Length: 45
Image 1 (cartoon, rainbow, N blue to C red):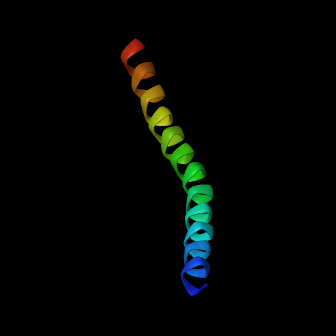
Image 2 (tube, rainbow, N blue to C red; image 1 turned 30 degrees about the vertical axis):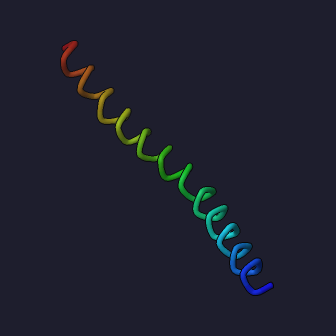
C-alpha cells in the first residue's frame, strides 16, 4: 500500500508541474514573438 501511495503522490506532483509549465512556455513564446515583431518592423523601415 505504501508503494501505491507514493505513486499517487508522484502523479499529483507531475500533474502540478505540467499545469505550471504550459503558462511558462506561453510566456516564453510571447517573449520570442515580441522580440521578433520589433525586428521585422526595423527591417521594414
